[in-house]
Image (tube, rainbow, N blue to C red; front, side, top):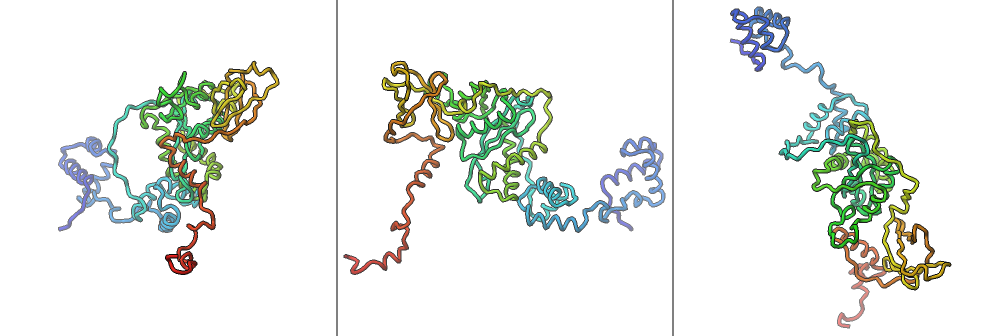
Length: 429
């Protein structure tokens, strides 16, 4: 007695063929049940009459596929994956195998090879958490999501730093990337300047509730209670919208997930190990990222606005504070007393309000009615204890330690055994 191994699909065909043989079903009805054509039903009936149930069993079972991956290609992929792409994801590794090594294979084949070689473990499906969906904006430049991500972007080759990202909500296109030491007003100001000069002014920025964008303690602020970045964007007529949750600005958060995988490994392949070289490479990465992941907006209208002649970015994107001149035309700013030099009568500027502007290079400009005033540094005040936020404590302590390194001949640097051998006489002396 011959035993046949049949699939569920073949068992269904066997049952239908039995009904056709008993004339309890038409060929047209059998074709509808099996989801095939009438012509194919006739072919199956012929095989069934000649060979019985064995005629319905696939002849390819147990044989290698005609479309199987060539052994040489598979072995080359295994060698390259172990040598260069051991910690890559299957999709990213597949792109590199095609672009850099010219292998012809599918992403599914790469995935199966990596699973077999224990280079990648399929992740279990995450529990779906439902959030309120928000449709993309219609126009490019209508809403730009901005954020900073502290991470080991250069892995162990350099200390951790922060990557600032500007991503358009309508297209998912990266508009600006920049490596900085940490999130600060000046780092966002320089990144914003680069974005404005490349694309123009967007209608609005969408960001989190970081103290750079929003006064989180209204009692501390005065007047309109704007941060320095908020004041600068107000002068440029760019609205700032603060998200209440990280999920609300999911576009930029998901982009960071992709970049923490792809950007880190791209820089490793290029042996990029510092912020300066990283910033040189970022435009190339943005172009590739936008080619792969950006989408076409619903509207072709570009909502960016050109910079106006009165938009002096050097002045607007500087740190600005208001001061009132004393009777002898002095003012204090950051523990330094400045003496105004003027040829006009001194009484004309007494008690006048001036604007002190500080740029990222530490240069101070004093403006009165948008006109620069000459000054001299009168003297620096004694530095008192300062208030530092919790986020900046580690940075401040590290900076202090840099200024208190022991001298090369300090006793702490000497070898303890050589120090003992240098002692003479009894230890009591």
